[in-house]
Length: 237
Image (cartoon, rainbow, N blue to C red; front, side, top):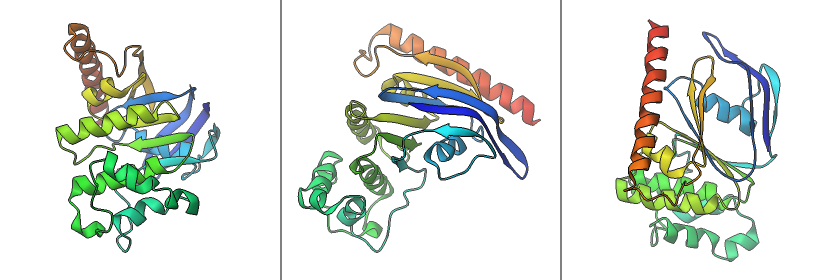
């Protein structure tokens, strides 16, 4: 259970959150979509405890794992060591990192340096590190940047399996990613951050992508998101 109670956060030139409240419960994947600059990343930083609010309170698990927009890997460590840094000795010896690397299509890269990897490969290492850490909450801020379509689909399927064991919150600008992954979808606008629409997707992960109903919902999300972007743009003029 996550409770955000009248959260406020201001930066020098913008009020990002103004008494924002929201309750999120259970397991599964909750996806947030909204325009750039609306406050999605700030919201995740507040939930994680990495950023203190100016007002209000956050009730969230003490331990969480985070995939940032940037890879934030340690260049002096190998690929495997970048994942093992979040594991205890027993987990390291049991081969958790190696299994994750294979699952993410990175088998054979264990001893390579981060500098040897492509951007998409580094992205998967960062995702692997977050998945390796055994926390009840996983925050993913635009996690699929730099991944080709086939690899993205494979990684998204891994994420859906993880959702059986923990709560996953994910930021994205891609409606197709959102509809493929989400059990619940929040469409946001701002600043200050507000919920424009809350959509529950009961057939998530198992819906046939050739079903016309899926594409009808996809178009509906695009329409709502487009309206939000238009409203945000008009406010900035």
